[in-house]
Length: 291
Ligand SMILES: N[C@@H](CCC(=O)N[C@@H](CS)C(=O)NCC(=O)O)C(=O)O
Image 1 (cartoon, rainbow, N blue to C red):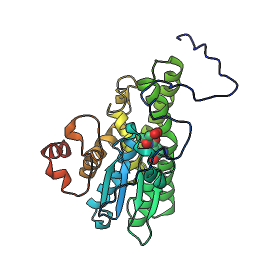
Image 2 (cartoon, rainbow, N blue to C red):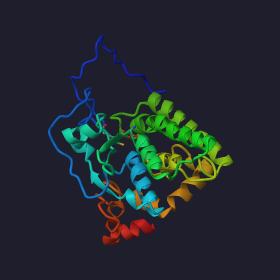
Image 3 (cartoon, rainbow, N blue to C red):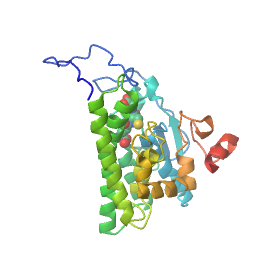
């Protein structure tokens, strides 16, 4: 193993230097807004303030699935929040999500707007509101919520742990990469075993559990996250591969995953979504939606 750092933590930690790494410019040890900025509001019942990361994709996929299933009341405006530029610290955003992270949702379908933060809470809020993608019988519903909360608890080890130290940290620390690669592979195995016995995570039907897990672990399995497919031997997780391919082929998933995207092939980016026709207006988007 490479030699450990000689850093000796002081008695009291203070924020007196940029720590380097990909997110050094936005990381702060305090919460709350840094500047006044109202959020835009569009014409639809749901206003989503987000970015096309895996956490953001969960919610745009859910909206597209609801619309595809005929729930016209699920029309939404998806506004772009540039976290690299600090949009998540604007006063309007913080009033919707005090945790200053995308996604943030304002449900304006009723007389009083309802704020929802945390992507898992959004999936459940929408599933309950429309009676869709969440099982009704107690046992299957419990299984669905278990996998939904498993995703919310597990993904920070994948993203903030493995992804951060493998791809973004200013230096490669063997101990950290080992620790989180082990945990990430363990999580892939948890999923693989479940998907060996069940078509979808909650059972026979596609639910918000799959919608939550797919952008993270489906993306990882298909080599789309952190350039780590080969490093983690993702092809070995055959059941995850089968499930990831099947979900990735759903038209609503193809649409949802490109909304608010700022990275990758420009053809796979729909920066903001305010109407179903936004997917068709741009030839590039048509190509992306088919691909
Ligand atoms: N548990 C949260 C995680 C949200 C999250 O980590 N969002 C990241 C982008 S994927 C973010 O907004 N980061 C900006 C920051 O940390 O300042 C959820 O699922 O909604």
